[in-house]
Image (cartoon, rainbow, N blue to C red; front, top):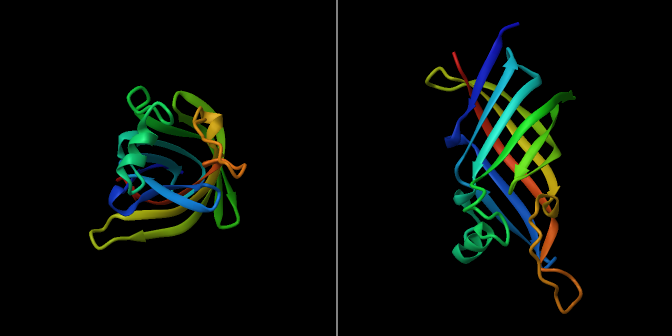
Length: 176
C-alpha cells in the first residue's frame, strides 16, 4: 500500500490544556500556533508516524499576566525553550480509536506519553480536499518535564495541580 502524507489544517484544529487552580477550579489554555504531520499507509492510521511542534510564545489562557508567568523561567522558559515537540513511537488501533504512544519534549526534557485519538472519520471538503479528523485526549505530570513551580496554600493544598489534561481537535489534509 502507498504511503500517504497528511498535514495539519490549522484553521480547523485546536490544542488545549487544563490544569486545576487552588484545587477548586480548572484553568484552560491553548497553543495558538502549532503544526503536525502524519504519515500513514493509505487511509489506515495504525502504525502511522506523527510529529508535532507547538510554539510556546503562542500560549494563551485568556489572561496576559498568567500567560507571561507561564512563558517565564518559572514554567516553560520560552526564551530558552521556544517549542514543545512530540514524535510518535507507536500507533495502535483500539476499536474505532487509536492509542498513540510517543516522546514528548517540554523545556528540554523528553519523556514517553500515551494519548488516545478518537477517529472522527474522513471527508472531502467543498474544494476537493480529503481530510481526516481526530479528537485527542491525554494527561501528563508537569513536574516530569521540569514544570515544578508551585505555591503552598494555608489550607494545606497547592496552587497548581501536577496533572495536566491535554485536549485536541485535529484535522489533517491528505497530500496528493
